[in-house]
Amino acid sequence: MAYQDPAPPSAPPPRPATVTLAVVVLAALALGGTAYAIVGLAVVGGVLDRYRELAAAAGATAAEIDSLAVLPVGLAVLATILALAVAGLLLVLARGLARRQAVARLVTWLVSATGLLCGGVTLAVVVAQRAVSPDFVFDPVGTTVVTALAEAYPRWWLPLGAALPVAQVLGYLVVALLLCSPAANRYFRRTARPASPAPAAHVWR
Image 1 (cartoon, rainbow, N blue to C red):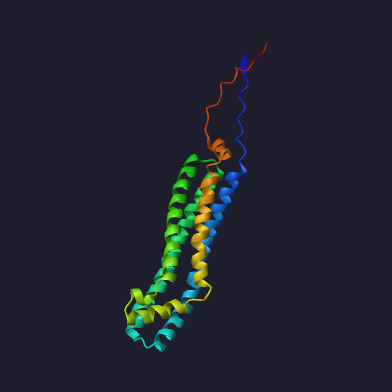
Image 2 (tube, helix red, strand yellow):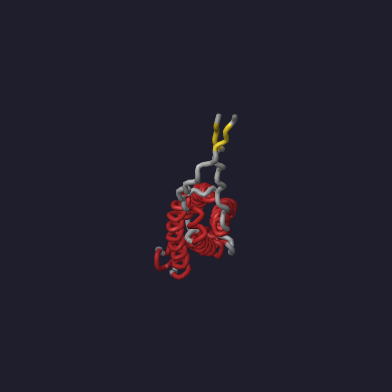
């Protein structure tokens, strides 16, 4: 009676530091975006109260005040929904990268390119808001309530909103470059196993 020893399973290659760092950065982007959205929800109540006070003191009517009061609430809710959806996607991609899934690497590149574009557009909008006077865009009545709404936010809110797209652009750029490294290429490459020599047969007599 003869039998052959089964071929030992090959161990997966160790995860390189570049891939591990990409996973960490993706998780940080997910947590950072979610935290920013939650903070926005937390401050929106105080923003509305202060907005109504400032707009009323500036001479705006109740109808004019109410016409813009829905904007901060809608933006906060929309930002939270979007942040949670993006965070879920990033965490799924981070898990896929950690498990050596090539499709996760490809989707991460696509998401990084989209994140770079969105972050750049957001940063440009923030800069434009600081550079353009409200009088250039709105009529005198609209300027009153718009200015009141802008002043109703905490002083740290606008710098935080400007820092977020910068961090987003840098984070996605770092992830894309890390996943292009030679170590990452070797880690995600699926090569065919070389043919192993036939194991020696054991014969029972």
